[in-house]
Length: 273
Image (cartoon, rainbow, N blue to C red; front, side, top):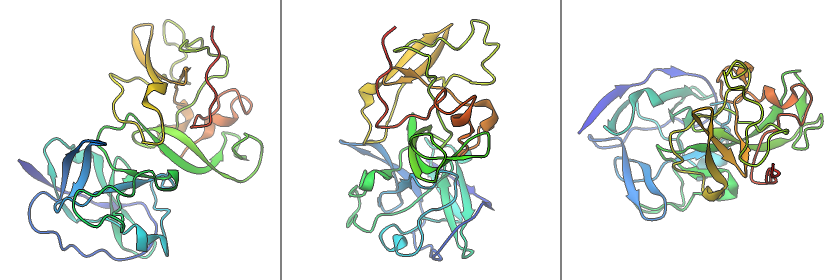
């Protein structure tokens, strides 16, 4: 079964009008693979991808990038019933063309995929990942900007640099608390009275993880009856003033840089209690 979703345009950025040549049928479907599990494809089985530089929901793939990573766009989506219509959207690129998004991530093809079922683009340059419906976390690459309005580099010093960091499935930044211990949350109060400022990242289960990360580095812990995910032992949190908005990284400067850092592949393991 499938159903039709008409998605309205929003947002912004870049090149190349897309032509809808897809035959009638399910225009976004799921394919089961041995290596990657359930992945998203178009109606012909061509794999779809996320780009981690699209941290704020606009497309960072422009110019020559589009030759290797063409955009995916369908005005009227007919989606697999296991997918949620609310997770799909559309951005308008800088040239006025449209691009379909999933959970805020613009969708792309990879020119190196020759036939249906090919997944040759996953992990490319550590910034391209096969589109999946069940990521527990994702990766974003962009300039960090703190709550103080200052731009920070990967060392959390004032400066300009594109930094990779872990987000939830919708691109919302996740943070560690520097005073926590290995798989031990020392910040959250039993009555959750401080949870609005630094909400714990709650999960029912740990599902798909971007391929460059080690799934074994993610663990669920119990925090006063709620399940929080940890990475390399660091309990993960949102920052309330990020307002659940993808691309916001305000927490990196609060109260001073380093107290609530971002996390990524280079993050050291949390210390034992």
